[in-house]
Image (cartoon, rainbow, N blue to C red; front, top):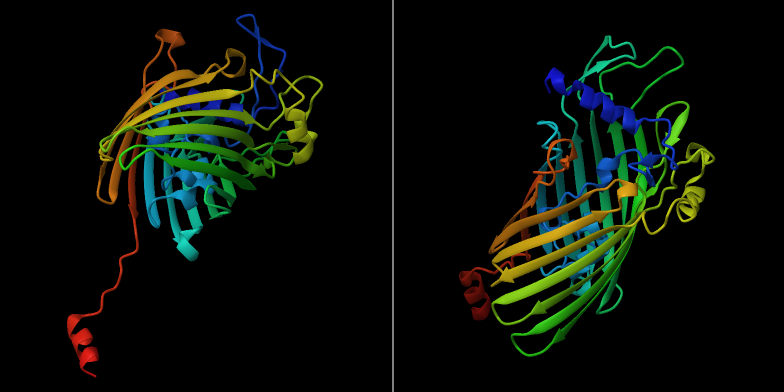
Length: 393
């Protein structure tokens, strides 16, 4: 990253390691309702399909990326095995070399494939940053990066209901290669452990041979885990989140199907204010306080998505994401396409540019690309000569 982007990197790191944000401050006359956490990359959608549907993915039909959205969906996958790889150039309107890479895979086992083992890895690179101290003196160059690795297990509880859990290791080195010792300050990479817990319900109603309707519901508590620390004096919450979603899919004929989905999410982290030092709270207390601080309605994020498939081979998608102005003011439209051929599928999503000048959304022009392979186990067939020999005995 060239020098003109150094200040952006320093600002980003300062935000991640900040000592607090006052919840009662005003933005354009509006009382702020910000919830701040460490490792926010855990809440960046790594899936081009859901990314083109306004980031709605908790209850849509499952695929190999269900590990991120709701691990409980995986037993309802049509195929026994799946693999997915996604690349996301992040904050493209601000900097050229920040990206998120994501790999995920799953495999069914047990009677009728009602159990699933899954895994995924997320890698977030913040590019090459030139660091300075408080006086503007050079403090070296670093390559800040963060990653997580998780494994999951899910299973069907009935024909329509499933549940799942995944365990996650998180590593964050946001000042890699730079020493922050002296003057009472110290720095080291942060590590944390977390878990996701999810449920999924899906029921299909067959109208006739070509028509059907499927209603699905999902709920997931994600990133439930330990705090993360970059120095000896402060520990920050990771982005613990509670999400619920619904989807409805119409198979209107043998060629066309339509899906509408809605997700609602809330961070399980308390709003910061002058009388609320969350660095001293336990995990359970923090989750409890998250329902007692701030404006609960304004803390909710909403994602609305639409999807149309033609012959299960070509898809067009659109969506909208809404966040209240007091809680970050992320509001944007998304669109994208998908193409499926045999076991191979490619998805692409695009976050539509909004605003101009200083009001331009920094997420504008965000792209995601996903390659996916889903398949059933290949059956082994005995050679004909062996069958003939066995028949003659």
